[in-house]
Image (cartoon, rainbow over all chains, first blue to last red; front, side, top):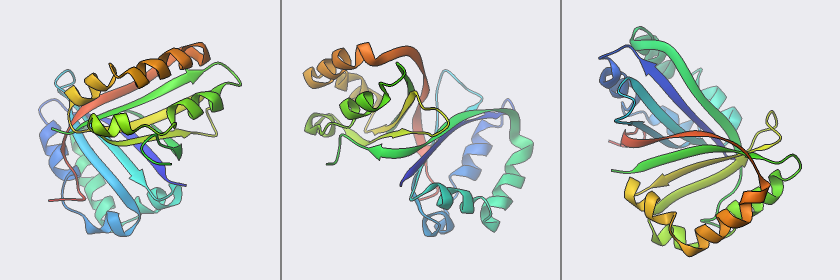
Length: 100
Length: 100
């Protein structure tokens, strides 16, 4: 069952774009682990927040991606840029109006 | 700039699946209006919540979709199934680790 993970990451003021740079760095690993979509973004009303929306082949694929060396390195690199505020949710996909 | 809209819709207890059925009804309108992705889902830990994750060609495309007759009809039909609890967030996409 495909799986969605969406989240908000609080950035230390002034560090949002550095966080975006880390999260948007090209990664073949993610695709090989079952990542179907990984969109990183911002919102003018939340200048210190980075947003992510991810689609995975399964919850397990998402979970295993967190053990990838490249992801662990990115998490370490991002840690000092994070304010600690986080949000979001996850769900199992059951359908779409764009397909039968 | 592509645009993400993700949300949580509280359902009246026992009405979640009816809400899912409305939201997953096949709709060519959405695609024609610029909807690139529209995933509807559930989570075992939140039995009365329907989750959506949407990707649009632009914020304007998303906004204009809300005026579509088919969407207005779906909103009317869904209204009595909604508990009133809603959440989520929206953002402009600035990049992805899955593409250069």
